[in-house]
Length: 327
Figure 1 (cartoon, rainbow, N blue to C red):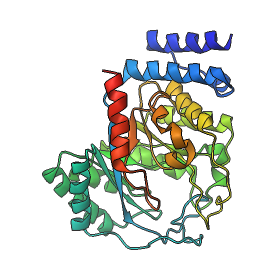
Figure 2 (figure 1 turned 90 degrees about the vertical axis):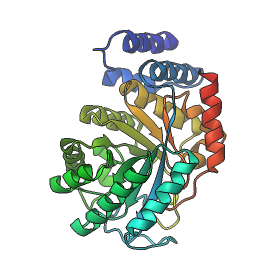
Figure 3 (figure 1 turned 135 degrees about the vertical axis):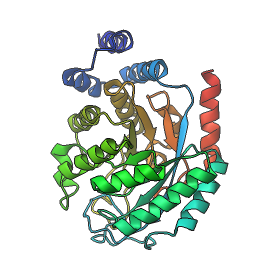
Figure 4 (figure 1 turned 45 degrees about the vertical axis):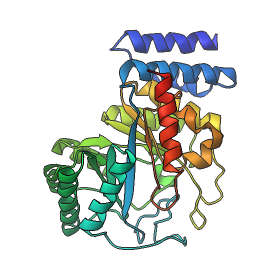
């Protein structure tokens, strides 16, 4: 019965462009266990293959401004409210960001994002980001992205004019769980930033961190919120507990729960890019290559903001192996 319903929902998604998974159906999928999870992953892969390019895209980031953040996000090593052993520094120079972008293009990355700590940047800092963006666009074939905190409408417009294509601003979790994770700004402010980015012509990139202590229903909730916002890309992170943060003792998701979560996001957002980002090494361990079966069509390579990623060549080989199997 379970398998039949998974396949029935899948066929509706594949054959009826007006069909959308309901909350009830999503909660049913979230309750699947055992062998049914394998069927769910296989069906998520069918959906991805039907609607999205077969080529896996790769993202890289640079921690362009580190630490001293005024926000109290429970997971974050860069919050000034946490005692963590990270490097802190102000916004990097334009030349430093451009040099890093040139290096990342050589590795085979297709997207490059400048990420900064803090609630928001000043207009002067935005100007530096814009200068870096313009030069990166002139010297590389990279798509340039920014993750710069809360934006004003004017800041979004000048970023777009500089050549930036994507703006990343995570919701982090479901609205019903947000006050357990952050109390220093509102969920509405995050949504307004995404709307400002979209209004300027930037493509909105927004996702979450899974494993913060949220329920399965709350994972479904945030997946539907992202669908309603019509974001272009959903980055999924998994908590990597950092010593000194409020969530330092949080247990990681089981690998199959992480993969099931990816599949859930694919069923709810069948035509949206899904990128797997931070924490995958810690959570998925030997199951990292399964992310594509589960519905992802992109992956972040290289290091993250304050933690190291997997060897880049290993990730590129993983991607190549998957793509050779699906040509």
